[in-house]
Length: 302
Image 1: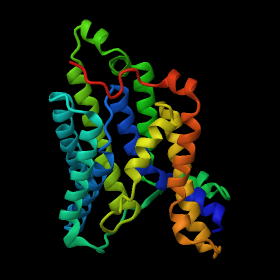
Image 2 (image 1 turned 90 degrees about the horizontal axis):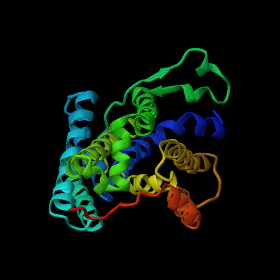
Image 3 (image 1 turned 90 degrees about the vertical axis):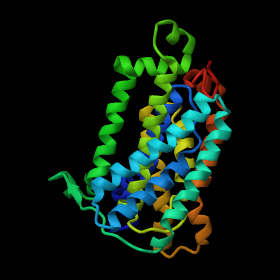
Image 4 (image 1 turned 30 degrees about the vertical axis):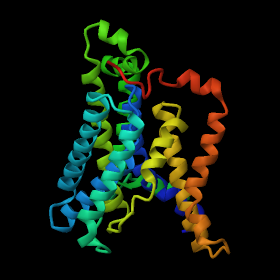
């Protein structure tokens, strides 16, 4: 397998932690809530999932527990940021730090332990195509992440619940005047974001890299938050952005394998460098941000 085939075949799996967390954050931000605690929620979910699988609980239970852990952390965020009307940025950062601390605490006894991942599901005929065939041989979580992306796009653009969620982010007073609870809608959106962050962390620690190491999320949560801006709050663009970052993260590994004389620190930092460059380019386009931005994002609503 050459470098190109390696990147193509592994791109979707590498993109899945970014994608799952970014989809959850997208829903939260569409409701007008900025949650910067994604990194901590992912780390907490990753630790819980790894512990469950290592002790024989199975991947399904691990993903369920990780999702619940993410939801609980997101509800704590919602209680402080929405219930007590605290600053959303400061609250999100605090929740993120809490999640990182909890993951280090619970994961310490399992440092450097490994577990068995899950097998891949190949699509007949398509998986045999030269060069790009690897795209059609992925684990079940990757396929479900793709289906979730499609379902979320449909919900936000075609279903009443999705349109109502978008309306909350644009004009919460108008939604309240129609008799809907802005508070309840936003809590639901934040909880969904926590669920997806927990599942994203579980995938990272039990499937994509089935071992435990402190700090293994390694900034994926921050890239997920950046992906939402990168995709200008649109599901399709977030999906493409996740694939881009997944490919970039694999490009560094491919370069090291090929023996290129590039410092490993530079190759490891490629996804973050790309994040900075892309956000700089997008931020310079004020018209694009204004067109797709969320009017009430981060604002306290009474």
